[in-house]
Image (cartoon, rainbow, N blue to C red; front, side, top):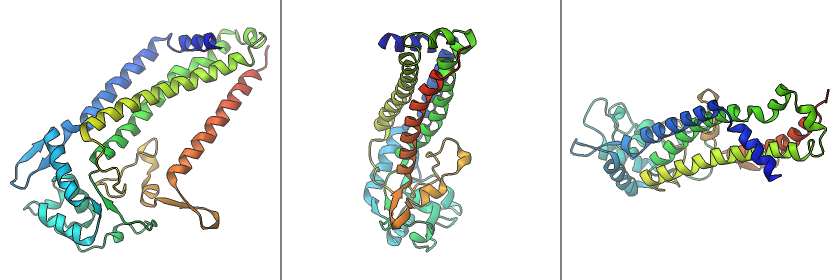
Length: 293
């Protein structure tokens, strides 16, 4: 079985286009991590000067440490008073993570408090827990980068895995394989296992690398902050922007029968596990059941 899996991997990496796709993934990944990493951060200090790079991240985290926790109307007003730029359009300035998070929903155009209650900004929010403020720049950047990279990796997998089942059909050797001793069982399982291994190694390897980069740049600070309290809509739970994940992010729980509730994340996870099992089972049956001419 191991030799058969190795053969399938050799088939996968026996084309120049696969290496070209891998090179594209690497270039795009490095560019996105660089463009969303610590080097891209800019923070306005209270004296009007700017900090950039890792200094900006450290300054941002110090500010967040003073205000992290449950967000109240009093805390929102305090933050806006403390850091609002002295400008008519202060609410649109890039100041710091905490200020921009608050001013995005509870600030006027000049950066002053608009008097809105915290919950009023999220009329669809159904969780009993209060909204928690924290430094979310690293987590948001991590999710957004992961969203795009999973699209690119998906393209790579389509290109790389296309010959796993189709090559025998195009070369006319499917009859030879399917009439052999292990053609309908071991050969089919080897193809499926090789495909899943490549998927896990590619996606898992990238996520490990990305996790290291963002941990190095931002640390783990802010992991307990509410996802609703980011300074822009984060749509990383869907493969492309057009799907618009605003509702699943605004409403943290999905109501089920009998009054039970569950997170949307578990719906996605269960669906992925079910479809993995279905494709694993039916992939072998479809290949093994191919009519031999």
